[in-house]
Image 1 (cartoon, rainbow, N blue to C red):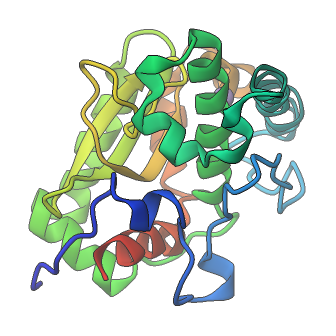
Image 2: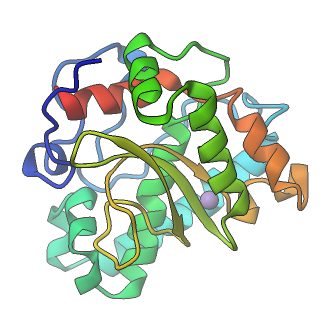
Length: 236
Ligand code: MN
């Protein structure tokens, strides 16, 4: 695959107008984060069974995700933050109180997470397949690296597939509700393409302490079209 010029994940083109432009397909167009809105949930809560149970999905979306949204909204109210897109806030997050970092991160990360899932097993698009082969050797090698990162992260956090500014993809992990857009020391930075929530609230009702099975089953519901869309939009 010929590596195209990468529009910086930290540049204004991506940061201020995320995912606006040519649409690969309606179904794969991610939501915009403008206006800091709480996103709708596109499926029934039982749509991802048996991999993620309905009760976990309902609590995760309507309690946890909404909680981050409401706390961020309350903290941002009356400040300049209400007019700044989340991706841009993250590039300067070290300047803000931790309550902004935690709750803006929680709002953004879960929106990405729901978009990363589809209640059907779908093929990896050719463009993404070639990029994964280039950067990891094979799709299976990528899954192994991502899965190991997700299974072995100590405590609560996320594992990510990110796109570096140099146009190469990599696996990264973040703690709590941090994400790879944040200018926090120790975070491997890049544009999030795919993320998995490995907080216990994401799997404990169905899997108890068996995070590994939850991570392995995640591959049955990954929306590769959305991952491909994010990659495509960042590279064109
Ligand atoms: Mn969560």
